[in-house]
Amino acid sequence: MRVLVAGGPTSTPPAGCEQVADIEVRGERVRFGSVERADTAFDPAADHNRAYVLVGVRAFSLGEGVPGAPESGPAASRWVEFGSDFVAEVLAVGSAVTTLAPQDRVVPVLRWPPVRPDPVSALENPGRASRQVQRIHHTRLLRLPAGIGDAEATCLPTAGTTAYAMVRRAAVEPGDSVLVTAAGSATSLAAVQAARRAGGQVYGLTRGGTEATVLEKLGVTRSFSFTEPEDLAELAELARRLRGFDVIIDPLWPSRFGTVAKLLGFSGRYVAGPGPAREGSSADSDSASAAASLVAKNASFAGQRLGGREDLAAAVDDLRAGRLEMPVDSQFRGADVGPFVLSSLDPQRTGGVTYAFTEE
Image 1 (cartoon, one colour):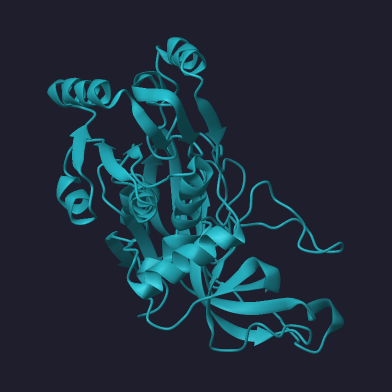
Image 2: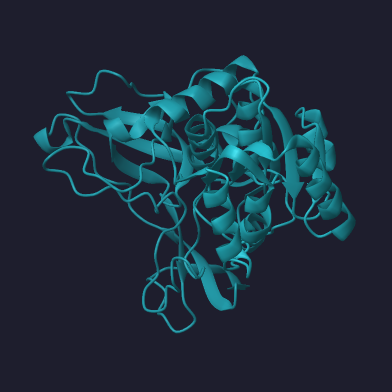
């Protein structure tokens, strides 16, 4: 099997590693390589495999980060596998597994905080999507129905689950005015659609304005660019006319919190996502006054990192039925590991970025 690994500038690559990229990731030099290893051993009849599944990863994405990024720390002393989201094919199942069968396609059910799938198993390790063959507890997998492409499915585990959980947590109702920030990210694009399905009138706040065409196609009433002062002034005026937004969904807080929170209306609901996964910026200088404004408005504030199996299942059902689109910005394979990582971390991209081990 093939395994993609990453390491810091002073670490020693594993034996037989073919280096395919040497790039700077948010100020940290990170090297990437490809290693051929023996396939993971898996005896379906063995008792220790009774609840486990052997899968072959078809494509993966970075999901919640890459070694070397500030939030995960540089891989300075060892080379590690990376990536949390994938789509895979079931190769074999343990004797007690009845919900999955060989040739099924699956995606991982990610959870936060990490938990043990059963009393004897180790904590889940989602950051190894770059390993082509894996042994995974059956409760950590969700079967995909036919008709969903690999690239779209690869974007679902983090982005789809988080987006649907955030909209559910916000309790969006028909007629609610909803502002979705970072509106070019895969999570935000899914949140836009989930909020519209719940009956909300959705507006988008983008990082550069290039996402406007995609957002309009997805039914966003109007999008505003965070980098354009004129757009921000118009957004503030819109919030004034609306008496504040009923809901703000902010997947990349706290980098915009000080500006965005003040746009929330009385008794509004603000749902914050896992953080600035690609921008790397800290909370802006107005955060304290923004927090005070939430208190003054009797607003509610909730944090949401990832979601549950039911959120992922809902996203899969909507994708299959054509009620959800998961725009894919770019797809890579082979030696294009560096461009894959850089594209994944590019704040100007619209949609997901995937790396494929196989042809779809």
